[in-house]
Image (tube, rainbow, N blue to C red):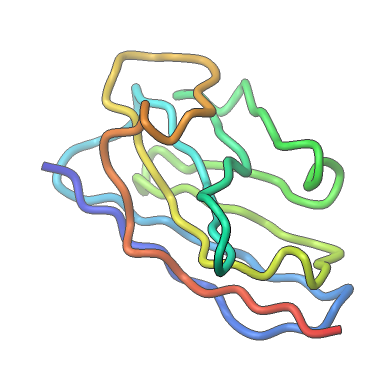
Length: 126
């Protein structure tokens, strides 16, 4: 069983930055794709970014390209999301997720991820 714990959310003004972390325990995820999703009130859960097992392949939703950077440290079993130039429309609960299948490259559908964290709130004020 895998446990994922997000941290780093908070309240920030538009244009500011936050760095989210997702710490995994229970088993190593060094051979697994991981991703970030977000869900705003009244909206469906939305794919944000994913990173493959070795960090060499990343994929982003168009709305965050050039502003967000996903990364991972397999030695620490931890994934990160650096968020810069934040906008009010980035306000949401952010979730990390892990896919247990072996070394997939890009996975954007939430139904394809097997494990989820509890979420961390990001609020961007205008």
